[in-house]
Image (cartoon, rainbow, N blue to C red):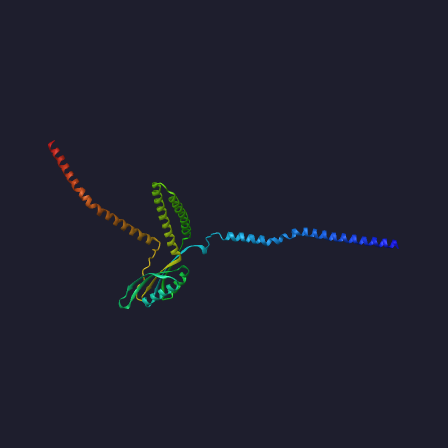
Length: 297
């Protein structure tokens, strides 16, 4: 009986020991699994790195550029339209320009007696974004006879003016600081003159910048409205190249040169006459003296 209890107690102790070892192993395996799994969790940080890289790229993209949208363009256009009623159409043109956010900068008209105006030349200022649309609207007011559009890229001038204005502003500020610290009268007078010069230069640069900004913000369109009987303005034609064109240009050049020579001679003739009278008298006297000397010999 005691032997049976001893074996039972020994078996129970063995089971408890094995169970503890199994738990410790599981715990160690779990700990080691966690330790081994830690590096595997590192990729979870990749979205953060990707976001940082994207933010860095976005930071570079925000740097100043000279893309098409960032360029400063000056648009200038002209259009000639033949209409039935010049005055009525001019009023419609004013409405189109005003509706586009612009204004009429000039209005010149030629009278046609009792029939009204035979011709009207309107200088229009419209926002650059509405330039093409306004030109198309003007063309639809009658029969279009002539259209011309030109553009000028002034981006470099604008950037250069910005840099010069910033530099000149800094020079004005430094001059004012030195002027505030001046104690000697001579230094005060010299600094006042220098600050005034710098301020004048800064004002000039700012005026150029405002003018350039006005040209880029508001485009200029010259609209010519013609009465049905009014002759169209003559457009300069380039001479066709060739022998006849060269001969004609050479003849015109010769006539121009002859006109210049005749003009110069006409200007010199009074002076030549004035100088020639004493010279002629001296020459006659010299001849007489020489003749008298020969006779005496």
